[in-house]
Amino acid sequence: MDKDIIEFVPAENVEDEDRIVKFSKTYKFEGREYSEVDLSGLENITAVDMIEADKYLVRNAVVSMQPEANLSYTIFLASRVTKIPIEFFKGLNMKDAIKIRLAVANFCYAED
Image (tube, rainbow, N blue to C red):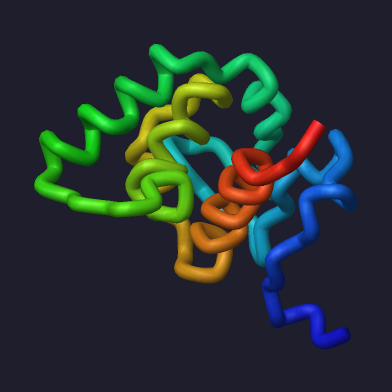
């Protein structure tokens, strides 16, 4: 498989280590270098967090029929679970932003 192709991972194959999103290259933010982010905190997302993410979309005039697949929604939740400012996620290159979006969406669609 081509390593540059990002695909949807079937929910039954998602494991905890898949919550670590490795960046395609080192990312610098506020004087610190990042090579990955840990989204394992998604396990603790509540309906309140989702409502806050919905409000974030409304404040930014984003309309989405499937918010869990929307980049703005998913980076809001990623920011919430990592405690890293949302500006961090907004500055990611396209490839890594899509990795974040897919990791959050995969988590949302996973069956227990």
